[in-house]
Image 1: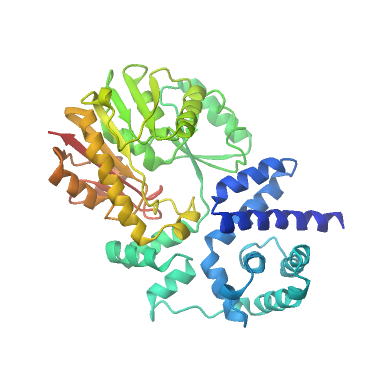
Image 2: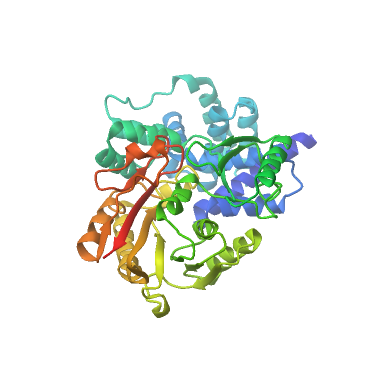
Length: 455
């Protein structure tokens, strides 16, 4: 009995998490972190179960609803929100959690419905889920060859407009590769301080391996490593000491492309949480100065926390709106980094919420904001200086089209990327000299980088 109560508690916490995300518009990673912190006494296996179930239900929501609708006379859009979530959780466990018995998934769903006061719907919940158990190998999906758009939307739980956008811009092969990659398990990528002594770096890697973590050197950059098997980054050796920081390789490439030299002045305009800021400071090797800016006190505090942990002294943090001129920055910088707010379509594998929140119309509004930022920040770089424009999205309107707009409307010219890039990425530089990275095609998040010079 205690085990059954424990199992029910875990699912109840997942249900509460998903309710908060769906009804209050909260981000799942923030809500989930709060729940896991509150129930810190739970062991790592139970926490991993909760994380997989909560994020999995969100990632595959479109497919889960399709399956429920396939077997239920009452369609998901007509269901009470709590019952719909309980059903989605049940189907996800049946299809995607091999360590959960089908009967347990059904029984726990019934118990959850009772716990939430829906005694009259327990028969319905039980009946539909047991039908899914029996017929899970006979579910009829839209056929790829008949209607690829419908097939991809349901199979990969991706809103139709995003699939359509990617098909229009990048073709079916790249689109399918990205869709598959978005649903794969993410690995943690860290950047080890390039200036760390070899002996300390060796000790760092050894200690991680001794802790049972699978550590692999990333093929793109010598100081990038992927970690598998860690439940807490903050608990790893070297974190408090400031030997490494979590950062995707795509983001690391920004400072690789910037051509940062000793004593340079860098302005990072949309900097939180500060990964590129700290990487730029590392490249300066204690010289020069990085002015790290973001729009709110909260974001500035997050940057400062990371800087303090990493021990950098050549960084100054500012609360500054990138759309508004900061007079003292005019023509001060050798390099300006501008990783603009974007639709985030390159990081859907890490932030599943995004695909349900953003619309195609909103991406057009985002482009307007991006151009407002660019119109302001180009003035911060000296004539002959460098601007690195980047986004974590896969959308030509926010990427290549913005670069085209910049060179037509601002005193900027493209500096084609190539020499600065790892060998494996050089063939992927586009005709316009910029780099679009695709999750699944490349060993990193979806990301875009362009290098420009002020003239």
